[in-house]
Length: 436
Image (cartoon, rainbow, N blue to C red; front, side, top):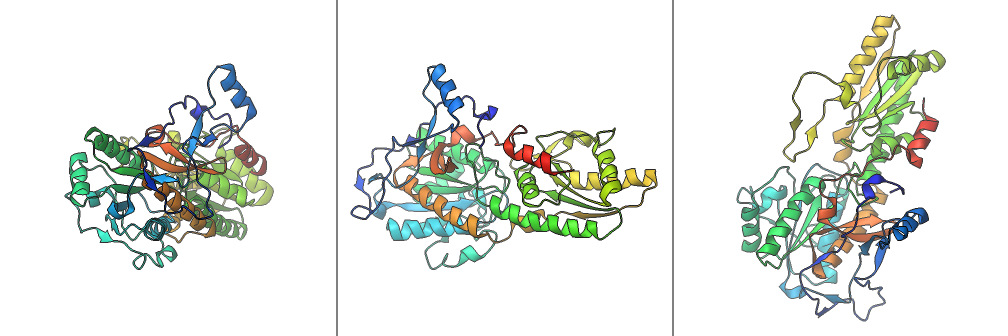
């Protein structure tokens, strides 16, 4: 994340909850292995001006606890019963993370019993459709080559008492939750209730969202694959547009509240002329509106490509419908892609200017595809560090990536907040420079 982001202000209490004092020797003892201590931190700010500002205010520059294997672990491996679930929308890399966690628990820590709870938080409630899967290296051996998730997924809240009762029934003392903001919100509530009841259960999150909008993590798995696949969609839109007189290629990409996919896909494909994201408002009408600028672009070059994140331009859509939410509490945005398609066609019809418009929405194809090489390797490192944290007795936290290090971040710090594109940052300024 670029320095100077206002959302970073106020990051103070970054301490990681610990179930108890680790007293067991790490299984890595004696190996040529780099252990990490709890007092090893990764600075939140990388810019010297931000650090000097902290010092001027007589406060210690905030730092995240560094992730990695500890010399002493909290759980005795033979007593561990691990569980995991995937929740929210599909994302490339889910199976990679599942596989890594199973392999790491089994081969590196010697854990014998691992449950895969089906269909998100429903799987640890009395509403569950199936008994949990028994996960082992044989079951997950080649799942990294599949899109989606072998555990299934769902959205929505479940009763906390009911879920804790299920975890106790299966004697789970380590639960890995793989998901985004809504999933982490549920894990945070579960961890808090477990602590109140003195239940020795570690809750560890692995951040999943192709939108790359998890707060306090520079990167989330699935994002790299999403940008790569989006680039292919943009390439197709450009070819369609260039093949027609006054051809327009319109591509809607995912990005409910953050425009990272649209921005990076635009930077990766220099054929985009207009990039629309939620963080930057735009107008349709008027001399500097999108429609007038699109018209001028066609006069110059006779073709154009427009990329819109799904959350862009919501202030323009006034159809009288009440604001609705999905089962995870996310606001359901109106379809900016279809809205722009209709407005563009209306504008040029009223002007008497013939255009050919091709509309492409690859969203669900992107979400369900296999992870690319970069995401696969990133998933492996996330999964390994999640297991290290759990076995060390960390809880109520997730594994993140910051300043080229894997870190531990308290769930309370991230839930309900999103990382967004900085309109004054280098990336967006580059988009401005290369478009239109």
